Image (cartoon, rainbow over all chains, first blue to last red; front, side):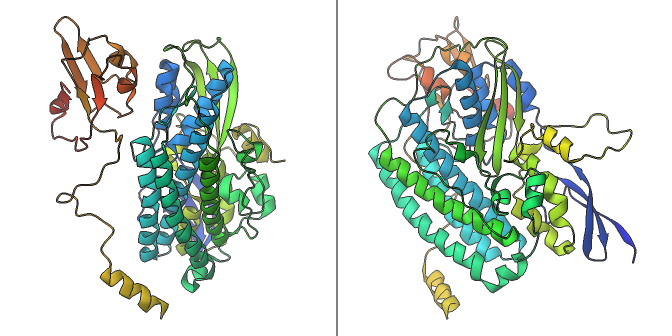
Length: 390
Length: 110
């Protein structure tokens, strides 16, 4: 049988994200992923961050992603605060955790809704998106905006919670929790969901470690890799334990995401219960100055995995900001989870990886002519900022 | 049987979505909408224009002119935070339908 190339994307009815994949197929079976083209969403934010003051760059860093913007500001402000050598008030830490976990819920539900849509179960998609709206409404109430919350600032947060807010968040969480337990049952037991997801797109633990996979994709393959383990913000006091899956297929990745949402609900409840009184932000001068040449690496656990910010100071503004987004790290394993499965499975597998191109497109290739290069394991480690799984 | 129960429940319950143009959404307290400016209390101190991350605010101190480009505004509310007057001269209101066919119409006095 002849094998031939199947181009998928950047505009494709089954893939929402602008990414171009070159697949070698044999009949209906995917043999290998030959090429991956990114960069259709390149915005040049890293460069733009270099000529803004510190306080203004926080707002720009939020615009990297429309789904997990708050995590970007969390990582960026955490880095800047580390450079300044300041510790934010406890109340601000609690509010950051509450907003982050609410955002994780809505991001995971968005991904899972899209997986349901790719499976052809549009009713399920609508149900999940209806319940996602609960989290969105709570975030709108807390921050004043549905998408870009602008909650974080250098030295704390910008808005406080009152007792009315806390009551409403608790009410919303109760509704959400019921639904989330229901969806775990649907994704584990329902026969039509099972047929599309069970045993599809398997990522072994060894491959996940070798390819530096992060986030729910890694945790569904038994890899205990979660930045929240390190206990930044208040995760240490919340006694955080990551959700770990066993099988590493599409179904496991979905179930891990739902279980993480349930865990987020609990984390928010604990934070609301233990929130201390006090200031929400430190009083800092309008023009922040940081010693020239100081540099730091700041990491947070975004919904899709580890998000890393490298920040170097040039006095009153950043000298260089490098953003390593989770989807970028996860693309390395995409070829392995597509291999050997049907063409019809491609959308489900890619959606279960939860790619976010808006985050990922940091790089544009200017010189594409010349010799082909093959990247090995060591190169991946280098590209990933040199981190190895323990 | 379970399916039938769900179907009957949905048949009599009201839809989750709103009929938007007729039915307006309920906005929460502290919603960040279109920028509003109060000319009476404003001291034209330039703080909002200096702190705006999108450089959407332009002020002419001699002519006592305050202008905002809604097309550039990112609705972050920084101008409201830094405004020194009491009550605030610049604040984010509740207007959310901020589109127009012409960019020039988006440049307003707030």
